[in-house]
Image 1: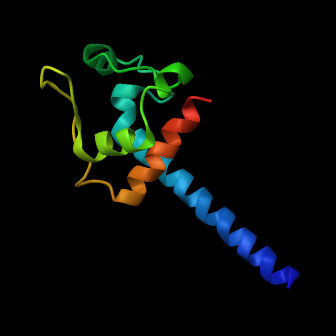
Image 2: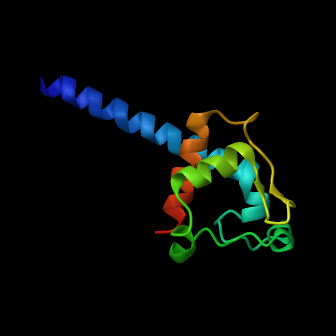
Image 3: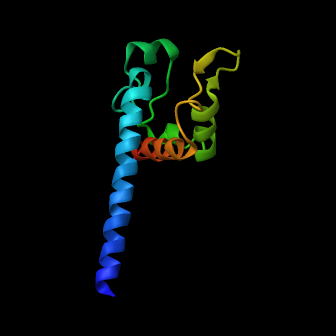
Length: 109
């Protein structure tokens, strides 16, 4: 029984490590050019688009996981209709988007 629990634990850890690696890779490929590697938004594109500092816990309190998921999936527009972030629905699965939301949430801690 202990062996079975050990195997299940290793598989669960491996799966979560793979998801984290995928989120990190997706972040680097799709998000870092605007939001920066660290999520603070200190890039040329980030400054031009006025992206928020995702490492700030106070800012993270202003949106829900569902809001973040929706913005990643469908894109994000400013109040005046200007596109701030394109949709990633064609590039990422729902599970990939959920993993990115978790990755972003970890930045604010």
